[in-house]
Amino acid sequence: MDENIEISFGGRLHKFPIINGTEGEKAIDISSLRKKTGLITIDTGFKNTGSTKSSITFLNGEKGILRHRGYSIDDLTNKSTFLEVAYLLIYGELPNLSKLKTFKDNITLHTLVHEDVKGILDGFPSKAHPMGVLSSLVSSLTAFYPKSLDPNRSVEEINGTIIRIIAKLPTLAAWAFKNRMRQPLVYPNNNLDYCSNFLNMMFSLPTHDYKINKIVSNALEKLLILHIDHEQNCSASTVRIVGSSHASLYASISAGIAALWGPLHGGANQAVIEMLEEIKKDNCNVKKYIDKAKDKSDQFRLMGFGHRVYKNFDPRARIIKDAAEEVLNSLGINDPVLDIAKKIEKIALTDQYFIERGLYPNVDFYSGIIYRAIGIPTDMFTVMFALGRLPGWVAQWKEMRENNEPIGRPRQLYTGNISRKYVPINERKN
Ligand code: ACO
Picture 1 (cartoon, helix red, strand yellow):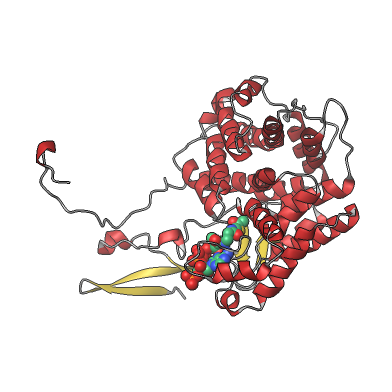
Picture 2 (tube, helix red, strand yellow):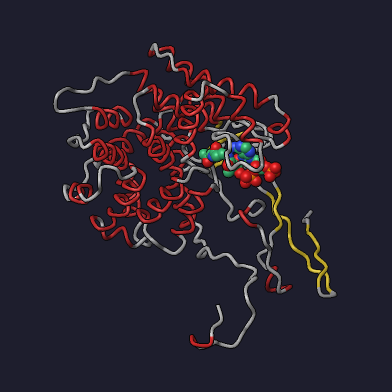
């Protein structure tokens, strides 16, 4: 039976249909609200607003469920490679052996970036944050592939653009790091797998070759999968909204990288390690920082805690916590920051302030500890997140284009001055 919701306004009863998702979620379809009633809705931060219908990722914040195309994040992290999951997100199904081989071969073929990219990179000061560099370099790809500017081209051409961005992002990310270090750039090595190639471009030097450590590349593979998509978050929504104006995939991804950069989103992983370091320097006084986080007159927030959707636990945080222990043990690293993190988690999970507000460690609370252990510098953490999130952004952009979604253009409730008489400059009092 069709369900409706009735809104009584202006002396009339207006009906709006309830629509159902495949996991039993329900939504009020208000697409005819303004036409029928003249009203709009206000929902700052979109806390209750569904911007689209999507079949990529399902998450249930109350139950701590995360699935991509129906597969649990645990299975995907433990049983698949990053490129397999990327294929799943972008094309809808897990690839068989031959499809995966073709996908991988295509990506491997396009890892090199145009030599002129080096000129653009040279223009950045070495102090430039690698997220800003990465966002700019991705946007610059539109100049090297001008046909990508038209997102209405054939499926094959769009697919070429998708393959290129997945192939080239590790190269651009590693080069953003090399620019930061003022070290010579390392070219991609197509004999290596996706993660090992990235690590090689990051850490090889003319003086010595980087030796691939399987523990490290496996840990990286896991981290990238865990970050691969998270439905309509700030950066995915940005990618979709920029793409909805028919801007190119590269421009949309560049905007997604900028959205991810902020400390309330992907930038949290960098902020977590900086916070843990600060606590370490402050005699490991965990209680002081827990109190600061609870103090409403203090701007301080416990970074890596809380999530817009997960109010019970973040399923990715559990996997990452175990992975962090495993990586540190395997590499024989004793990082005091891990002990501080565990102490904070323990105290916060029993503290009424955090319990009442549903604040739990999120994906970024432990990821930085693994990045540190595998030698990634702090200001590259969010770049690592972007590398992992890329297939999700691509899938979100592709779905939005395939659904022929209209340009994203929210309304507002105007609260400024009403119409008033213009005052010439010599008569103004302020
Ligand atoms: N430390 C202390 N208090 C917090 C924290 C925190 N980390 N997060 C939320 N709160 C409090 C708020 O002060 C507010 O308290 P109040 O009700 O007394 O006013 C309440 O919890 C709700 O917080 P909101 O900011 O309204 O929650 P929202 O859903 O808008 O924000 C967010 C979610 C941005 C993730 C927030 O929890 C936060 O800032 N966390 C720290 C940054 C972080 O780790 N971000 C990464 C998110 S995961 C990701 O993007 C990959």
